[in-house]
Length: 110
Image (tube, rainbow, N blue to C red; front, side, top):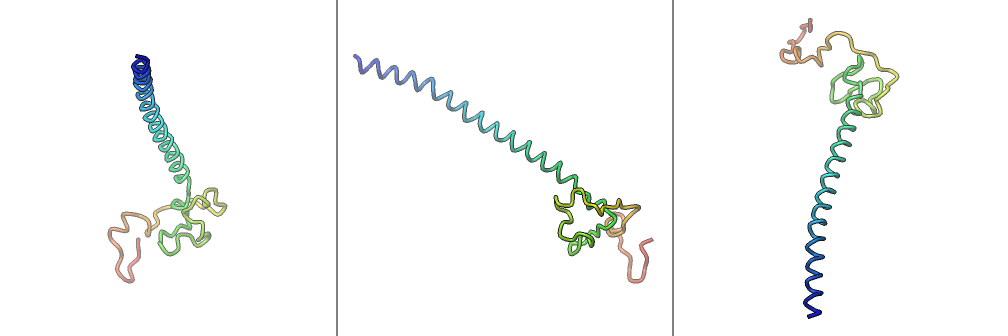
């Protein structure tokens, strides 16, 4: 009889703990997903502060992105660049309208 009562108590404890454990794991997973999304958003906001593509010196070339700071161009180190000069007007190598039709040899972009 004592063994039967202890078996009921063990089943009751398991019946109470198991759903609590499942909810704890689910909430921990949800918390980690939300935390990862927040960190990703913060990282993207920081990357959008990189000014290189709006700079006068930016070439758009894969080989040499910036002749002034070639090692830090388009990286987080370029945030707050002292040599940043806002680009004025349309840069033919970057402008999508000019990329669609490129000039033939000897023609000017204008």
